[in-house]
Amino acid sequence: MGSLQYSVICEPAQEAGGSSRHFRCRRCLLKGCEQFYRPTHPQSRYCSDACRQAARRWRRRQSSRAWRASAQGKIRRREQSRRSRRRIPLVVLVEPPIVVDSPPVEAREGQRPATIPEDFSMRMCRRPGCDEVFTVTSEYSPRRFCCPLCCQALRNVLDREERYQGRRRRGYRPRRRRVRPPP
Image (cartoon, rainbow, N blue to C red; front, side, top):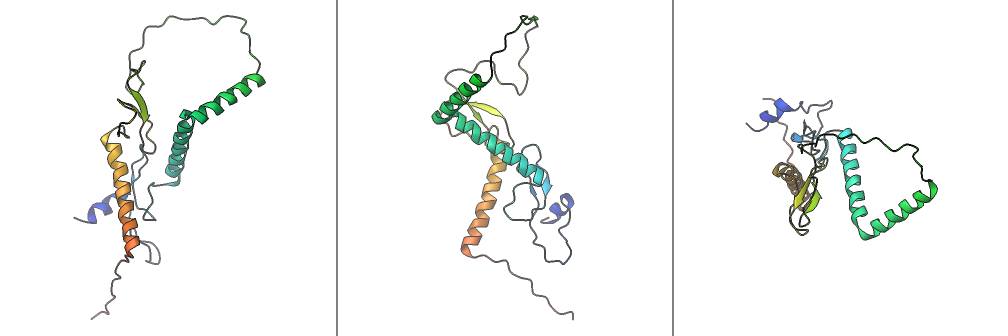
């Protein structure tokens, strides 16, 4: 059943000239997209430029979150807020805001819990595009993903890239097909 299962899902890899490299179809790594696509490079992870841009924005958001959580980042953020408060004068409200009593809202799927127990800490999933937050019991917990599907998706990509790098280190070159003259 080899390559037939991929030809149904992906478009054929035939281009003008016939010299195109053939890579198997794979799923886009970005959570939410996960479409099958035919890569142009053996280490491509995303199906389109839009997915690459979304993954880049996700990585920048993660790195800025990590920087703000560090001691130096907290100091810089505090200084930034102090400068901002000096520039913008306080606005005095003329009328007090009207408070309307509303019924208590039930916890919904995807919302963070109202209170987090002190012996738990919150983490973000490590899969690009996944903004799920989950709790871990210890700061030293090895858990990095919100669910097994996210873990498996990233594991598949890393394993494939490791195989590719191993073949390159060993000097692997695919065998060329011999063209036989017609009988």
